Structure formats: C-alpha cells, structure tokens
Length: 203
Image 1 (cartoon, rainbow, N blue to C red):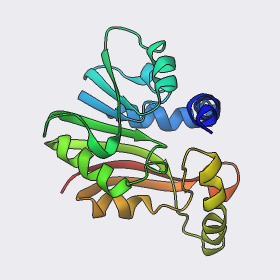
Image 2: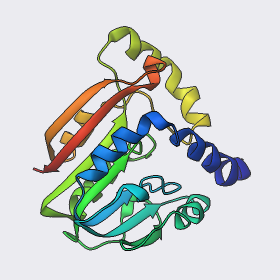
Image 3: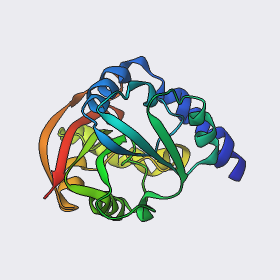
Image 4: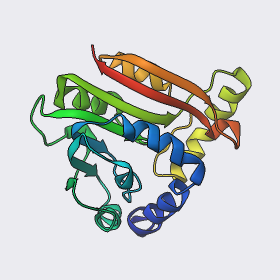
C-alpha cells in the first residue's frame, strides 16, 4: 500500500491533472495571484508555468515527496519557488506572511479540511486572497446522491478525494468571505465534474 500511495498514486494524479480542459481554469485562477504566493498541494507543478508578475515568489506546499521531485523540474526563472514537504493542517509559516493562497483541485483530498482552511486564513495577510478552483457537491439532487454513494470507494483509490464536499460552505465556515464564485459542470460524468471557481478574503 505504501508503494501505491508514494509512487503509483502520485503519477496517476499527475496524469489525471494534465487534462487540457483544466488549463483555462488554471489560467484564470493563477492569473489573479500576486505578491508572495502559497500554493497548497503543488503536486507535480502543473500550475508553475502560469505564474507571472506581480507574483514575486512561491511557497509550494506538498505532502508527497515524489510529486515535489516532479515539480522541481517545472520551475522556470525568474519567479522564485521554495518547496516545503508538509501538511496544510499545520503550515510552517508565520502569521500574515502570505499575499495569496492558491488551491486547485486540492480541498477535496485534505483530511481535516476545516483545520487546513483555518491555517490558510492564519498565514494570509489581512488584505490577502484565497484563489481556488475545486470540484465538489453538485446542486442537482440526483447527482448528489451519486456523489454520496461513490465517495467512500472513490476516496480509497484517489488519494482521499471526496466528490461531495460543499466547497463554498466549507470556505465560508472557515472565516472567509467569497467575493467571486462561478459554478458549473465541466464535460464528463456529473458526479466528478461540478466546479467551484472563485476568490475569497479573510472575513
């Protein structure tokens, strides 16, 4: 199981996230970043090529060493990137030290997501922003039922991914105020493709 989690699963996640349909979402979300950025779950570094000024430097937090090794190969100057192997439930950064937090298809996998969002809020400066694109709980009752049915088995083989997390609700309950939110289905099976894209600030 350790070999699956540490070697096979990171590579499967990398292949899944290379879907070209995700590129416009990445461009829009990363395009809003500025200053010192904390990216949660940098993965294999697929977002790194989208960062531009006014981003000054990136702190890349990732729990999987295999993915950090892949992400290091995606770093391009001039933006500085520092990698931290660790958990978002205990971010090793000072209070109010980050201008922008970025999450892309990450909140679905974090075991203690409320704690993690509290940590993101802690490290953000008072005027900072959380930028996110996530999949989660759909508005249609029939789709929700399938999300609830599939999630227990799905999570076992997808790195803990939950299909049925109410993204807006968990962000706002953690002390953020959504200032922009767009939702809708991507092409594909509806239980896996309801998308939340937007930005929030500490409330």
